[in-house]
Amino acid sequence: MMLSILAYLSITYLYNNKNKIYNINYVKKEKYFYNIVKIFSSCKTYLSIAEDPSVKKNYSDSCKSIIKTKLNLSDNYTDVCAVIKGYLTYFSINPAGYNNNVYCGYLNYWLNERLRKLNEYAGDATTFYTTISNNDNDFSTKLNMCQGKIFHLDVSEFNNTDVLYKLYEEFREFKSKVLNTQNHNDSCIYAKECSRLYQSIINQCVPDKKNSLCDELNIIRTEFYTRNWLIGNNMCMEADPLLSPEEIHNKQLEHSIERTTGGEESSLLTPTMSFSMIIFGIFSVLLILFKFTKLGSWSNKRLLKKKMKKLNLYEEYTSKLIEHNREQSDVNFKNVPKQISYQPI
Image 1 (tube, helix red, strand yellow):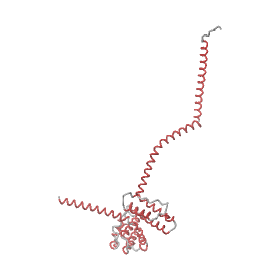
Image 2 (spheres, rainbow, N blue to C red):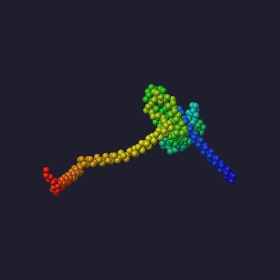
Image 3 (cartoon, one colour):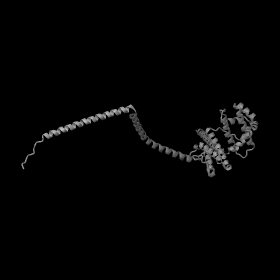
Image 4 (tube, one colour):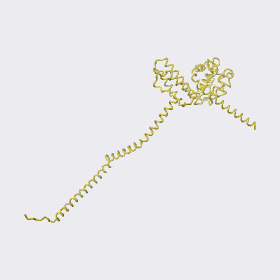
């Protein structure tokens, strides 16, 4: 009995701690992921160097063997493998002061993007990278700095990262144009694109709920407005404002109230307006029928006949009444007694 209890407690402890470790890793993954996107552009230069054909050819042979035999994919994926090796080789020799979370994070974003574009591979970034690293001796020695940091991004994670990365790029260009050119229209183009990108993902953020994506969007919004980027001569009226989640929520609430109020008013007016339109329509149809069709002419003749008949009856009745009154007057006059007496003078 005691052994059973101990076994149960051990299993429960391991299960709970496993969940704790999983949750911690998930939170770390999320924060590690979005809060370094702003630095991705610094790593882009080094990856561009690794994409140069003269650099890729140094790793093509070893990659081709793995891609063909282990993954059964085309030469396009051989190039992906060669770029990964060239990129990591550079950072293994010269980290350039970057934490490996940064350059591994950018490599992770780039690999997920490339595999989506090629669209021939049924697997994901995790499997692709693991297959290469497990079958290449270089990865087990000098290229193992990104082990555990390359993983598949689901649709939401990838889209958010992609938009956030582009948003930082556009914001950087916007600031550069504001500082280095007198042409207001040049900077305004980037301001509008910043606004568009921001609005495409800000709806994922709700008031009083924090996560690393929304934290980054808030950082961008704050910098956009507090450092005079849209003040005075830098003002771009064509760019929609970068609203906070609270402001968006309040605006949606106002629109909802307006729609509800407007709907009630229109529902009250509709029956009255409909009845008036029906009456007007009936009157118009009857007017046309009586004025411009045979029905109107026929109806007018019938009405005229009825009027004439009534008039004749009235005249006949009047004549009889006059004749009757005359006869009565004659009779009364004849029957009056001669009561006037003669008095001598």
